Every structure is written in structure tokens, then in C-alpha cells.
Length: 194
Image (cartoon, rainbow, N blue to C red; front, side):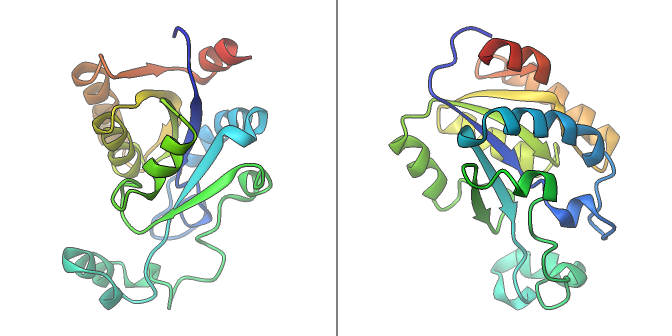
């Protein structure tokens, strides 16, 4: 793994609406939660939790996002039970010193706020966990690579609702981005940082 530099743990969308019984439930989230809890629990001040926040109504979003939320109307703010956008309870207890970063799209990089925060803290390495591997984790990872960060994806701490595309995403990241990205296990990372 080598020297880390200034790093942050970017934990993607480990929220109740994906952990609990909703149309967006990700069963594998329960399996990766212990690794994420271990890393975030040991390094809460280095942890930033992204939260994917649906709009109140489909028509509040631009372009094709409107169609997306017309399909998933039950996951909009006007229908989603309050609190389901919150972090899973085991992780919410870490805030503060861990932080939230709310976003409306798959990628947290679109409006530049997260990059500006990380740059102000001289961060050069991002350790990525969370869900889903083939959607928000992929968008987060590719954006981080584009912005020049060293990216470490903890392969036993990311999950998806679809096994085939989860596996394909990890293979893609490993095969096509090997200069800019490392795929390792959580235990190996934790051994390296103490």
C-alpha cells in the first residue's frame, strides 16, 4: 500500500433507505457494514459520509432525473418516511467528529463543494467504501480519479444489489484504473494505518 499522505475515508450512501425494507434495499449492505463500522469507528475524524438525498417531488429535479423519480415516486421526499435518508444508526453515532456530505446525484463531485473541502484540508488520498459499487461508488471513484486523487477501494466494504454488476465494476476498476486506484481488503488497510 505504501505511504498514505493526507487521507479521508469517503463512505458512500450507507443510509437507512438502502439498509431497510424499501424498493432500494441493498441486502449486501449488512455484510459490509462491520468493515465500514470498524474503519469509521477507528478514524471518525477522517470519515465523510455521503448521503444521496431524493427530491421532495420528481418535478424538483432537472432533465432525465425527473423521469427517474417519476419511476421511483415512492422514494421521493413527499412519500418516503422521514428519517430513511439518514445514515444507518451504527454510523450516525460517529457524527461528529465524522461528517456528512449531502448530494442529489450519484457523484458527489458535480458542484465542486466536496473537492474544495478536501483541497482546503490538503487531502490527496481517498479510501472509498459503501454502496452501490456499480452506481454511486463507481461515480464517486471515477470522479476522484479524474480530480487526481489516489483512490483506495476497500473491496470487502463496498456492496451492490446486483452481484454481476458489482463483480464487473470491481474488475473494471482493477483492470482499467490500476495506476490510479488500489483494490484491497479492509484488514490490510487498517494494518497499514494502525
